[in-house]
Image 1: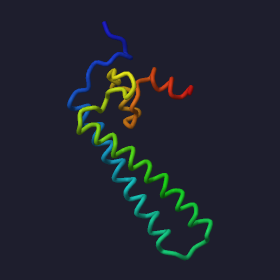
Image 2: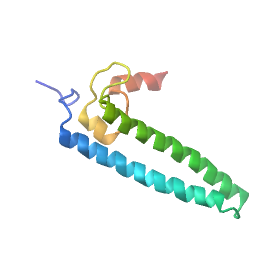
Image 3: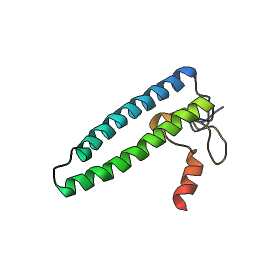
Image 4: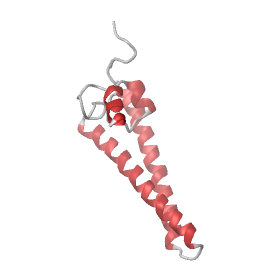
Length: 113
């Protein structure tokens, strides 16, 4: 008998749903990045607004990198496997946090460091 925390395997349909969500996030972030860069490149405006846009650009670029890494893990077959203990991550966790690289126990250990 399995508990809800145990891994029961990610089906192709579930993987496809997560991939679609990640690709949608990537598309939104790329649009956001383009819009932010146009604010900065357009010149004008207040210096403070430009500084805010530059900070938002850096944040958006980090988000794009994380989404891209998750998609790369899907492509290489390591998606859904904890980066620390190598146990499989439950689908429900991946559905909620598709960018996660750790199972709940390893995530807790990282947060307490």
